[in-house]
Amino acid sequence: MQIRNLSRVELLGMIANGENSFVEFKRDDVRSDSIVKEMAALLNLKGGYILLGIEDDGRIAGMSRGRKMVEEWIINIAR
Image (tube, rainbow, N blue to C red; front, side, top):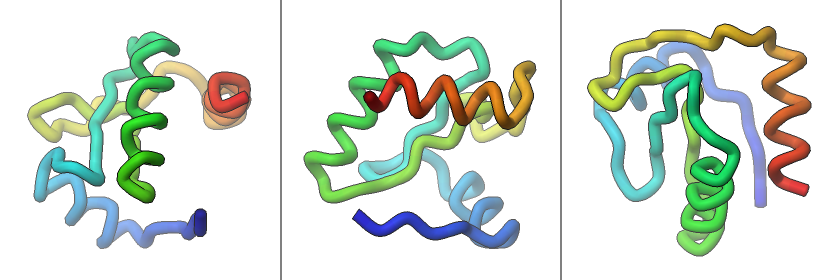
């Protein structure tokens, strides 16, 4: 699986287009088991994006935790 950084324009476009088979929005208060299910589903489809801190309606709410904490949390979930 290839991972690449998205530009701000690409990311905002992805949010504007809404959720689909390859893009899933997750709120800041998402539970670990929900992230695991989305990871598995996207891997079965050969990839996609889980955008954290985005409401279902596409509103950018952000994260209450710092970037480093979120990265460590996601890495631990993936393990």
